[in-house]
Length: 279
Image 1: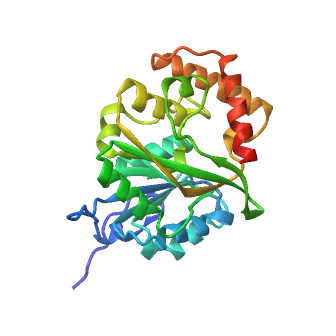
Image 2 (image 1 turned 90 degrees about the horizontal axis):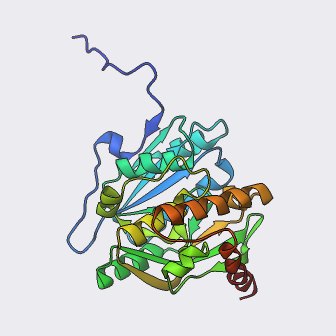
């Protein structure tokens, strides 16, 4: 008997993970499913650390989705190495980081969704336990917590402690938002508010949080614990030109969501950033 191979699209991108073998996760009684989305492009130097920080979580009802933008380094090798621990991964060209995040959201099965990109990692094995406990206790639409920004060459050296305990429209008007890698939100909120704006180059995460918090009035809870660490660097911290672009986009994001601000008001966030480095 000759068994014919299934038809596979010629241009099908590399993909893998437990989901491709029929292992689908779902929420369980008292244990909501949380989707962690990792976006990566040529991140072989740090991706393994990110993946391991998810694997080490004591809270186990986690769906981990990795969206790779068609890396040319060893990223694909790492994804294949950890294939049995990732729920789903795909490697294909995209239109940038926010397009990749949107792909992840579309694939997510979790009740709550958060972003942990390849320069980020959980601060400890109990991070997700803390997040879930606060989501359940508060019944809020979203939670966020503290973020440590660390030296890429020496992650034990904390450069900034990013802590926003009181979130108000004024804070957004001066360009201060919750730390995006610590933000976990109901999937249903994304379904109502829409996806990340791909016409923003750097500040689509700011626009998304402003849209959720101001335009759609989601409820939130602050967790006064460090749940995520992020290596310093990235688009929004890559020089004077990038700072100019991000500030222009923050101004635009506020205005498009009904908050008045201007470039001069954004200067008011500088003392907060200074205190993050001192404390």
